[in-house]
Image (cartoon, rainbow, N blue to C red; front, top):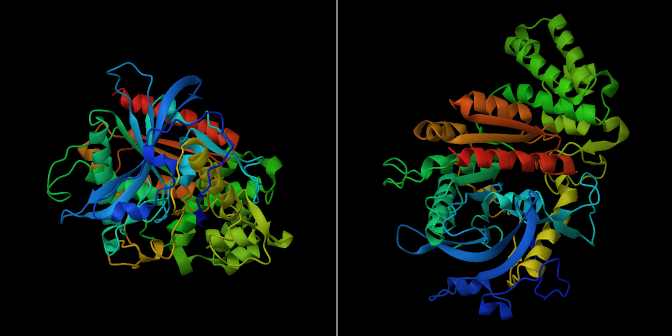
Amino acid sequence: MTTAVSKLVLAAILMVTPVATAPAQAQAQTLAQTTATAPVPLRFETHHSGTFGGKTIRYKAVVEQTSIIGADGQPVAQIVATSYIRTDTPKGTVRPVIFVFNGGPGSASVWLHMGIMGPKRVAFKDDVKPETTPPFNITDNAESPLDVADIVLFDPPGTGYSQAVAGKEAQSFGVEQDAKITADFIQGWLRQYDRVGAPKFVVGESYGTIRAARLAKLLAGGPSETGSMTGITLNGVILLGQAMDMSGKGDTPYLTGLPTMAATAWYHGAVDKSATTLPQQIKDAQGFAAGDYLRVLYLGDRATPSDKAAVATKLSALTGLTQDYILRQDLRVSLNEFASEVLASKNIQIGMYDGRYTLPLKSSGGDPVADDPAMGQYVPGYLAALDQHFTRNLGVKIDASYKAIEFRTINARWDWGGGAGVPPSKNYATDLAVAMRRNPSLKLMVGTGVYDLVTTLGSAEYTIAHSGIDLSSVTFKTYESGHMPYMGPDSRKALSADLRTFIESASAQ
């Protein structure tokens, strides 16, 4: 899932011609330059205008490289990030700044960048049935919140153009290592751009929600965190595709996954759509999961045959799966099993990352990402869109591949606290709870796509409600979309409006 960034200067210019301010833009730069004895950091700056949230503004885009220094005083990583900074505000204006990252672990920020946060976005003719071959297009992104805040897109080491220094990968590829590098980057960016006193937000998606939780606690410092009091607090944390609880507790995934299965079955007509609405379908599944389904799962083998039959009947009505299949699974149908089984009679598999997407069930290669009906179809367009945006609009010419997601070198080697590759077993939402206790003004927004079978609606609600987080400081939002809740014009506009409201409210405290 990587794509080579073109080394050619593309002739077509979209909407705004970038004005280069770095002489080195005359030719492609190489990342190898940055690891030499006398590093020459990459930097590309261009100036633009655009309309966001109904407001026409001027802004600059800066794609630049930052060295992250380790305890020995030497670089451990070279971060290449993209910043969008408004330039037409009166002197002395204090603007919020949003730091944005995706997940993986091992993913660059291309998805949020070209889906909702950046000034340009990928333009599919149909988001749910996207083009999978060229030509791909990009368009102006009126939904970007650039009118209310400056935006910094962060690519962790080993992703995008960012690199871990050779021989020091172990200092980058892990929960704690990653959080420290991100915190160091944020602190450095705030000092460089004189924004230490600005309202601050982080937006994390998928694994990025774990990064956000750790950051919220780490940035303030303390003897058990950084060894010093850095005192940097956040106004708000925005979690999209919440994935903080990695503890894997017993029957919980079956209970929390049911509302998403019910919503997805409704979408595809695997249940009688005329008998209910989508909100009611989700509400019914939530009530059943918290009631009879929970009770019978708790009883386990003590449940009577009639109890199990009654639960199977209701599950069938909610999910479209047959009662026989549900009973054979002992009332416990995983999300993966649901995705392959619910439309199997039609030879259709639905997407885990977005249940609205489908591909034929047969002839799948079995890869959990590349062959996923959602991820497998929208990835080509996203990567091509970022390539076009960098080369045509931002004047970026780098003689290297942009790494969208690195599975073998990062994800498989990730240190969750027990060593490289040892599976995780912690609920990281407790870190966010501690951060919110320390900073009573910190607000939390949790956004979930109802068709997301990877990080489900039920999981988001359950995790937040069982982590000690002050629920009065939490805003829950749901969108008729999937793992990336900005896929689709209606959900993208809804998320955009919710982001603006949240940022403006939390900045005004």
